[in-house]
Image (cartoon, rainbow, N blue to C red; front, side, top):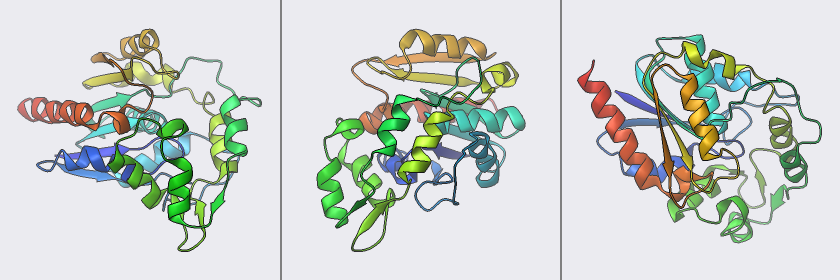
Length: 251
């Protein structure tokens, strides 16, 4: 059984490396979404449904989907479109909210992304700039190194693989999809996870999300934030392992 690992906005597949290294007995696949890493090109205006369609392009039916943030929303979109796509889902702080479904012109994260420094003299200087700052504050080394590997393009001078204008538009469009209304059709085992200290998905809202699915549980992980997979890959890997075992027994 294959486990598919779907990354968040502005990141890339190799941020999952620490989780994958703890799942050596499991076949895992991680990839780069459109506009990220080495994924297909993406230009504004962004429609989040492109990420759900991309999941259908890069996965085979019958596996387990594990996603973070935007990547978790993309897995839910794919499963809602194809009920045979996954046998179970682990959704870590999925960006799935109730309506109104519309773009946000003044989204604060979009403003921050638009101002992001796009180029660096080298990979080493980029690593020095990012390490221990902002989103990367509590990341384990393997996840951070994975981002430096695929989140930047170029050899000498390097650039952000997810361009600031693309990242900004993804944030403007984060509420402009109706996945929330389709969660009731996802009739497979689902585990919704969230960080206790997250500023993106609160514990109470994670419970609301889980309640939308016919067969879902929820877990709030103490001492972690929105970047749970990169802060505590050990916990995520253990939950994946349990899903693989339980799903295998019920096949």
